[in-house]
Image (cartoon, rainbow, N blue to C red; front, side, top):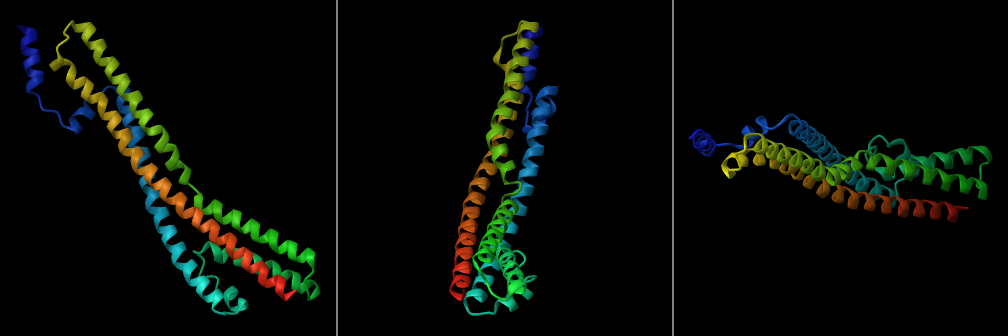
Length: 230
C-alpha cells in the first residue's frame, strides 16, 4: 500500500526543467554549473568576435579602396587611427615603417632592406592572425567536450537512480523516471552549449582564412610595388 501511494505521488508530480535541475544530485549540479558557465563564456566570445570581425571587414574594405585608388602611402600611414580595426592596415603599417627606416639609413633600397620589409610583413601577419583567432579555440574546446561532460553527469545521475532502486527495492518506472530525467538534463545542457560553439567556431575559422588570404595577397602586392621602385 505504501509503495502504491509513493508511486502515485511521483506520477502525479509535474516536473519542469528547472525543478529537475534543483532536484538533481550534487555531482550532476556541478556538471550543469560547468556547462552553463561554459555556455555563457562561449556566447560572450561569439558576440565579441562577431563585432570584431564585422569592424575588421568594414575597415579593411575602406583601407583597400584608399590604397588601390592612389592615396599616398604617407597619407595612409598618418591616418592609421582610422583603419585600426583592419588587419591589413596593421600589415601596411609594419611594412611602411620598415620601409621608412631603410630609406632613412641610405636613401635607397638594396636586397637586405627589401628582406627586412618582407620579414616585417610576415611578423605583422602572424601577429594579426593571433589577435583575430584569440579565444576562438575555446569554442572548439567547448564544442568537443561539452557533450561528454553532459554525458558524464547523465551517467552519474542514472547510476544514483539505480542505487536508489537497490536501496528501496522498488523497480517501478514511475519511481525511476524523475531521477533519470534529472540526469538527462545534463546531456541536454551539454548539447545546448556545444552546438552554438561548433557553429560559431566554423564560421569564425572561415572568416579567419579569408583575412589571412587578404593579408598575404596585400603583402605580396606591397612588396611588388616596392620591388618595381627598386
